[in-house]
Length: 256
Length: 299
Image (cartoon, rainbow over all chains, first blue to last red):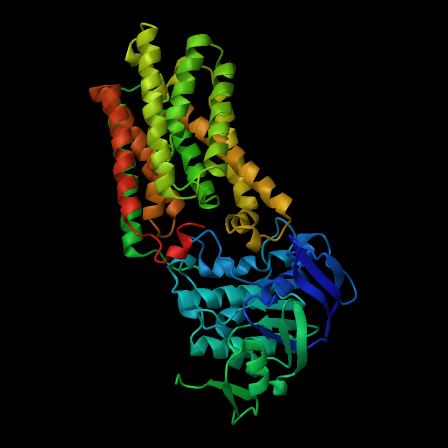
């Protein structure tokens, strides 16, 4: 469970986040949407402890994030746009490194660590690439590796910033399933921000719409309608319902 | 980690590297080269092999020590130190200090790009060459006084076994530390977002890497001169299994070929061969895309 209280962030006199309060319950996936520059990424980075807030606190199961980065790694896993710098690393070995926060210094990885890595290699369909260097992977597969890395860390809070970048339709399906499976497993939560509104409506349990560093709207995914999209994104859309899930789907008007 | 059997091409590469190294060693023995001139470069080769392994975890410096200019700076410092002192500890200390400072400059100031490092290295080598000519001609010395520096024969001339033993111990120790802390170092190599530790710990490992690199390059220059400058390129070009063994054999074999060339044709030919061999392999590596996706080329 994450409890965010009065979170504010001011950088060079510019208000980036303005008094945000939010509670995320165990097993919940929160989708965050909003125009570019609305503060989504900075919100996620502040919650993940990568940026120090100007005011307010973030509590994970009632406690602040510990100062030890190693311990913090078992509590929060953030996946943003960062790219690993060593292209010669093999895919499997790279994914195993995600378990470093769970093992003692100088100890080898446990069977469980290897089992978790194997599990997500299967989930993200990475088996055929496991012996390749990460520098030799196509962009879409490489993105899957980064997402698998974030999930393999096994932290209580999974924070994904624009995870749909570079993903094809197969990878999107894998990611959706992986997030659902992740939060079902124990006391875990997921915060996902994406510019792909359809992915968010199909994945999240609850939606947050951000505008000018504030939470402008919050509710279930059913709150998505043409008026809301027009109000916060400034474009006209048609909303239909997915015939299997009943969740809203957004369609653009053709240019006239 | 899943292990699989060696491929045919890997077995062939390993066999060729072993055969060439053995042939060069045998030729040197047949030429009655001093045993110290045969054995001591192998310590330098071991140090450089450990350095190449460490370089994999510190991808900020993508070139060999000849291309980066470290070998040239080391040679200049040794030449200067030899003019003022005969104390081996002072000379070794001066070399280590200069290499550490130059390594900090390479890691801290230059971008992790092979083009930037090679241009910087070429400029450094040009400057060092001019200074060396000025120093030797100005002091009325023969350029042949560079022989023990370029071929790493100072420890052989100094005699005693303390320095070779200490150097070998440092190489083995650093190799063991790198093996034990391998996972942590591999995390370090991917940058702060993938490092399970504080920013301070990350910076600390960076400083230790520079120090370890400086130690290993100093040992290489002292014991093998400039004859190991193919290591990084060989390592980048050979991506098969047992790459450490192939690399060790390649570097050790190349040092022995240099010893052989020096015995047969003179030290300028040996130094020239090392220099040209290093640059030829670097050119092959430079023009070959070892990584398909540009996102990795400039971290």
